[in-house]
Image 1: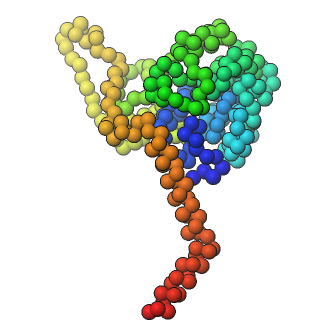
Image 2 (image 1 turned 180 degrees about the vertical axis):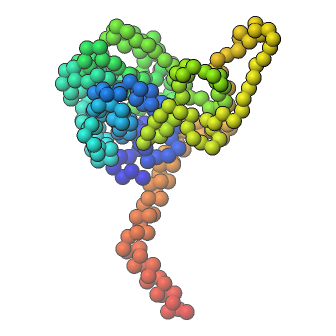
Image 3 (image 1 turned 120 degrees about the vertical axis):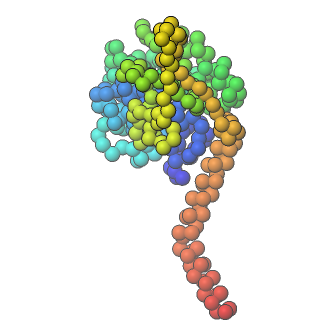
Length: 297
């Protein structure tokens, strides 16, 4: 267990396994890595620090900024080893960077944690060079409220329309995407064009464009053919298709924040037991116990 940064259930901590939403976070950073090559980057609300670290493997320089002194201290100890990554304390409405000092700003699941949305966007525009890029994510409050009716860390969520309006007030051009988690079967053309559909895989240490190397998932074990002497019959065959199937076991786990906290507490207890077993007093007690048992015999 990471002894420097406690898992709250909201901020992702890499030492806690089995937490829902990991793929959502890693997908965003994997995609962002495509746009930061050779760039100066600000990762605002960098949290535990893993995301800024991933970006630093592609960017010229990355600054991770977070309002938590504890998180910044942890990230600087855990990730900073080269000369192109640093973490600083700062808020979304008062970013500790100079004007026009970064080419790209990444901000994932940050907007909903502040009520100062316009101040936040103004600060992003201030630190971006003219023509710089923002890559930002935030939950759609209409759908997210169904998944999690009460999140004490979210103080101002937006609808999709509100999010679009906010971004478009500050940027002349924008593209919006919907992100959803899927588990199932994926069909893609054998001779699909490069870049027609991107798939990412990896973990906290590295992300890459690939299907991964799991012995079961991601490997194209099967081929499927559509054939006819009449070309009209093949016009409606989809280039890419996905069948979603969530096993019952995952459905039982889905959304169980209580179970995740229980996992954290179990890990804490396990770590504490290891500390006790390695302590001098425990080892001495073990020796005394063996000596007592020997004398009884």
